[in-house]
Length: 482
Picture 1 (cartoon, rainbow, N blue to C red):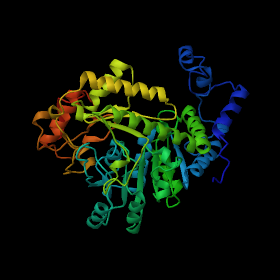
Picture 2: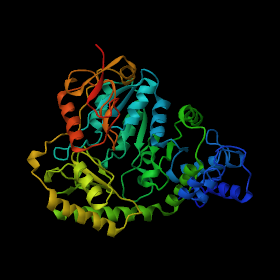
Picture 3: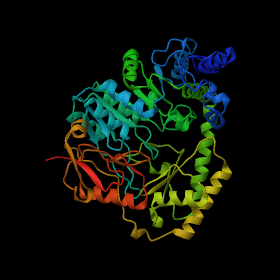
Picture 4: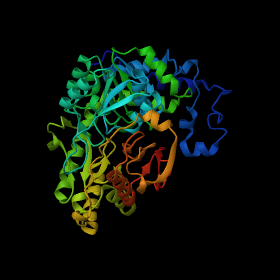
């Protein structure tokens, strides 16, 4: 199946060899293997702090890898079926932004859905590219954005033949998958690159009977969040490219913004996680699928909740990632964030996120059936104690954006702060989003409409974590002057 020996973990082996030599440190980091910070050692342990080291010849250098990191990245590319893989220690935000900065320059158009992560629009601010949004359908009950439809992409390409790339979520935060293979064929036939945001798609490369991965579908680049379903440490990620891309140029783009002090804790976690996925991924993700399907069945048997799955497949949903346990709650008169808060505060259960209509419980191989049963019992209890009148819970769909100025121009333009309730009709100069999932409700350059203000204030009232704005209380909002 693989060209290379996936049993190897070159970064980990090099760190173990380094530890055996008991090297005396006259370099950074200044904690000197923890001796200078015993409280840190007490918290993290000697073994962890002892390999928090600086780049050096035996351990290679992430900015220009030529030995053990280079070998680890080659093994990773082999495991994922990519032309090359880059280890990223600045999070998948960095990987996503690298994709865009690689293919776009100032004034270039990029075709993408509006329900992208904030990192995508941040990249447009940095490079000056112009978004051409394909508005996804909104599910009439769930209120979530669906997939990128090939017919809408054809129209966008026809109207914007000078666009340089297409970006697609695979899958979305809610598990919705588009027809990535057809999207790749359409884009490539018009000379456009295809970028996949696979922050929630590591398992697609290793599980069986799951939606197609970006690399297998023919994408040119894919940003993969290894720390989510891949098992590595938080903030570690992988950027995959096909052989259509210039590896050296991509490395130069990475080095524009990635740290020159790469954490070997993160790098070693990527190395070990890749090995584990290559050797055990099929078995691992079959267990996750089985647990998710069991949880879906149990939750739906409670009544009132709707844990959705493959039945969503339609013209606008090419496939569904069944590992995603998303539960619609509004039919009980409760928002997802209200159920999220109740689970944490009353039942000591930490869900992944809750928004206006949906609660997500993120499942991985580390979960147990008894934990799922505890979740289901808590949800049943919440329904009994807290269910309200669904009619009192206003139905708010995902937001449709109207772009009137480029993100870069709007972000750097002269702005003023005004009360958000008075902002209808003005051009937004900043971000407003619920986090997670980090999909902007408003982004720089978009027209602020009354219904968007209502959406933001409702989300705030219900307890969603709103981020991105200059005013952390979201009482005022920055708008373009004039």
